[in-house]
Structure formats: C-alpha cells, structure tokens
Length: 294
Image (cartoon, rainbow, N blue to C red; front, side, top):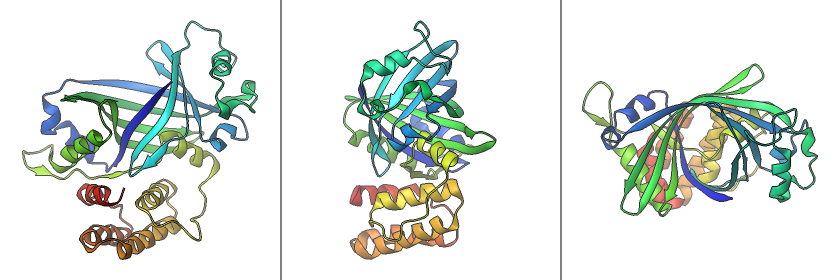
C-alpha cells in the first residue's frame, strides 16, 4: 500500500497544446501511453457508496489491478490510499478480477461485500502523456490525460493535468503548478499566456459514478469554502445542470463577502464568469485563492 499524493487541474480544450509547448517541459523527455481502464462495482454500487474504486488497467499485454480508497481533497490536492499489483499470472474469476488478492488486502470497505458480485460498470479510455520533473529533492510526474469516461452509450470528456508527488513535499506540487500555469506558451508563437486551468476535486471514478447513477441536487445549505466552490463547478461542468451553476455562483459571491479584501477580486471574477455561464478558467485567480484559503 502507498499513499498517492497528487494535484489535479481540469483544463480548457485549448490548454493541452499550450502545455506541450511550455518552456519548462520542452527540454524534458515525454512518453505517450494509451490507457484502457475497466472499473468494477456491485449492481447496487457498494464500492461507490464506500468511496473506493476498483479497476483493472490494460498496459499493452499486461493487466494491473488497483484499489483506491476515498481521497481527501483540498483545493485540487488529494491524498488517497492505493494498492496495486499485476494479475497476469494469478487466477482470475469470470469478470477478470483477482478476487483472492482482494480478500488478502482485508480492506474494511470490502468486508461486507460479496466480491464475486463485482462486475464491470464503466470504463475510461484516454491517452496519457507524461514528463518527469526533478528539482532539488522533489520528483514529480506530470501527466496530461485526454480521452473519455464511458458508461454504456454515454460519455464524459477527460482533459486534465495531474501532478503526482513521487518524492518531496506536497507544497512542491503547488510550486510546479504555479510555474506551469503562469508561463504557458502559445502553440503558434513565443508569447506567454496564462494556462486556462482550474483545480478539480472529482476523480475519474467519482465522475463516472455520477454519470452512472445521476448527480444530486445542490444542497439547500452548504459550507462556504473554496473546496465547496470547486466541487460545485466540477458537478456543474459534468452534469450541465444550471442549478449547480447558480449554486457555484452564489458560493463564490458569499465566499467573496467573507474573505479579506485582497482576495475578493479573484472571487468576484469567478462569480462573474459563472453568471455568464462560463467556466472560470483563470488559473492565476485560482492559485492566488489557494495560497490564501485552501
């Protein structure tokens, strides 16, 4: 078992081209890998209810099984438990799972579940381009993911940047994010422009779970925090529900009324974008708020 510490940024459609031309990444080697992932659950969604995700990832001819526990997310930075092992040379059931390995984990979220009832429920199919960034005592994997989440005949797009800490301190993830967001290059020229990105708290698995079972209505009362605002924008972008757009706008306005005056302009710009039914992609505003509030 290991702890996965990562920072996730949702990206505007034009952002991947800017990332590829970023001056910080031009000198680094990159690798592009197609990733096919099948996720499993019981028919009634027991794993989703326990906030764990079980997947089998296809890596060429190899298969790797992974169990991930619920993420503790703050401002796009998440920490979760992760158990991963190859399953090519072990006995698998008809669904393609190493059930014996799951039993051996003795994870409390699996204790009351009949593991033989686990079956495929959704898939993710995306291309991942990775760079390895090392500076001082930090070692960070930069992953650009583009593709889709697939539940039956329905789809959700994947367009995100994940910074995963391999070695070092979590604060170094934010330092790298600031460097990537603040000086992204246009693909057509050498001018630098801010990368259109925002923090995202929802994992691919949680997004797929809601695509499968439906999104909840906005809560009648809500804790007024930066993470509540990020969650509301995540849900609005996936569900397309205007109620979540209005909820996010109200959270931004109410949060602006509570914070120090120095941080109100960023929240006001976010609220104004939401009022126009536009996703607030100003990464500089989000990074400034993270430093102050997250």
